[in-house]
Length: 455
Image (tube, rainbow, N blue to C red; front, top):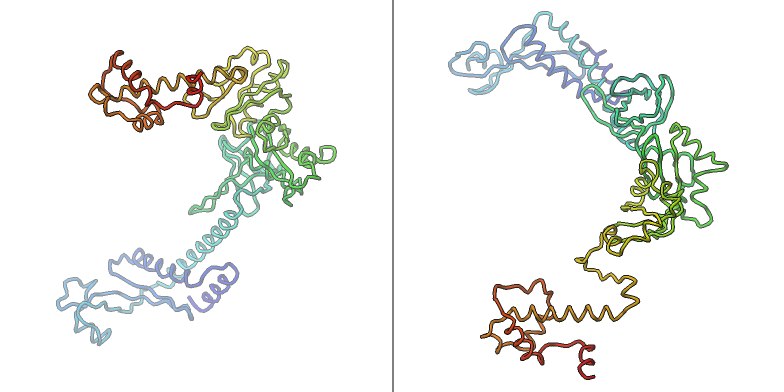
């Protein structure tokens, strides 16, 4: 090799951003392997490439010893001092310059291969870095071919892959046709980066709306959530940060131009654009569009809802094979049960509570319409609660302990939940009566109870 080789490396460093030192280091290591392979030699060698001239030097590496037992890898101290370096000592490594026959030809071929490989590596890393920064972006590509599993797309610099799970079953992919894809993932490999594309992702619809609706890019309109069953239907919830701009109308566009452009790109997939509302009942009603909703009952604690619709609207609200309700649930993040008005009117409060996930163990106090109409029922329930607590309190003591019971003790018991008052002491009915009668003046009373006694 010569200076022209070094100049070529300088050009590569400038144009391809490939470090010259990296190439030379890789070349030196490769030349060591080439020497050992082509010359069938077991000796240790080192190869150096001059960074200025491109000259190559090969050195045999031998350990300095007193007595030589291995002529290939060892050298005597006397010989090392005389022929190599007078400063060498026992245990040092002597570097003996050698000139293998025809090694220049081997070196040239090796250098060529190394440079080609490093150029490929640099291009691979460059493409990987470029597309890694574009994950979750939309890109336009040209359909190349399709096999049983993957769709292959020409992205100019590299080939993208659309796995079967990222394809849309109802779509037809025609060679040389240009389509838009979402960059789903970027994977590096020894050969070239793998650019995983998607046609089924919800984010592809988001990117299409950002492309067609400038107000979204500007931040005036925002996409709250999106739910998609690719190839069939998508629901998208939007809201406006400017009261003067209708978010749904802006997304639809003049005479439907904006949304129709998206529908065309998705090969006639249906798109429902709805208003997001902070009021969850209203949001759920909107999400079930185009059905008309009578009433929405909710349980915010576990995000469950019961939706009531007219009998004629039931099938529309549920949708074909449950699709409308399914997408609405995903869009809102709530579980949605839909009942017709006729079925709802036949339901008991217990059945409604079960659908909403409400039960007797709930810490929330739920007052139904019957209790509100009959307040005395609430008072009766509270009295029954007090009597149960008193019974449980009596279980805490044996006959020998009753004399030591104080009002402070009973007050403490009264304030605790009855489920925590359990023990192994058996008290018969006479003992319970005795506790209740003898200590009644110690039992704390609610104000309502005291008024009843005074009367």
